[in-house]
Image (cartoon, rainbow, N blue to C red; front, side, top):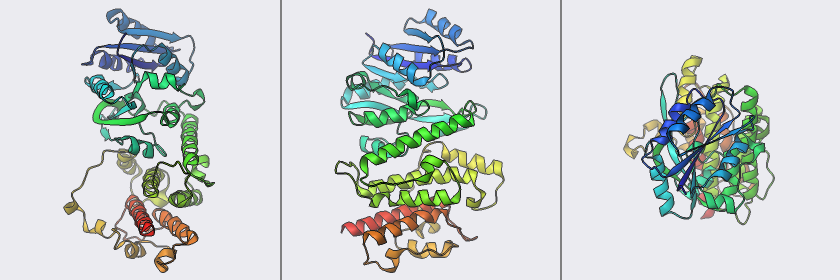
Length: 416
């Protein structure tokens, strides 16, 4: 029996299928079967797979007579898998030669890990522009990140077969488009997660194949998973408009930011695995991600008038998941950034915000009642959406991060 089963579904994938297949067959680790499932393709996909299968007996070719969708096809492949581990692969991506070797070695040495991902490089086929995407590394960080965002690059994961079979874990066909995100939400109860910090997969940025309807449906499914995950840890009702309306209009955005900002103060369930500071951080990261999307859609949030094409190019570099972060040395922090630290924050925002606002805990530091705290957190969360003065030297993203740090400081003071 092979040690690893590589599972790759493909639908009308002739354009990049050869390159993806070669990247798997040329791995430094060779003890694997390569299950390729043709999901009812109408192009030359079948001919390409059959040609490879004649030359390499590690390929196991299966096909659906009609297009059945990603979840059905992946479940079929997982049932066929003979390997101790199942490694995912997509038909338009490229695995680095040492990918399977490094993942297999980690899984062998860490038996508590059931899902192992990696960092990856995303790229545009036409421009060859690349972005290094860094994913959270350890189990706690990954599961915190997973409250609001995909914690793994799906085609980069390796799964421990027994964990999924013994716990009845399969992909849910009702979540096609967000099938991985929904599966990890259920799997996290049974096993530990990890992401190798090596860049072991190259992922093509290929959104043009999705219709607006498909993009909207996928976004709603992702939001359903986020909503469900929050309900598992919060003992209060909450309503975040952007989860259901997908509206970037300012009223819905403000209400969404207000509600998200209040989450760290909500009543937590007894088995909630995260601290309030961790929830504060996770909410801030998600709001920052929303801000970057919003700036692509709303002129009223752009700091300066900019040519649309230039703005799109600039922001797309950051939007693609979590772009690689550099650890700046403290000596390199600009004087502008220093104005946003805890000691200066409350004075700085008065100088840069062109709206009236009231933060109760600033006016009466001794009032740490739930009402005062919640109102303070709501207003702090709304700051990145407020009208900025023309000479404001900060991006909305930096204001969002600074406001989150301020909330964390308030939480620290309350705890003391």
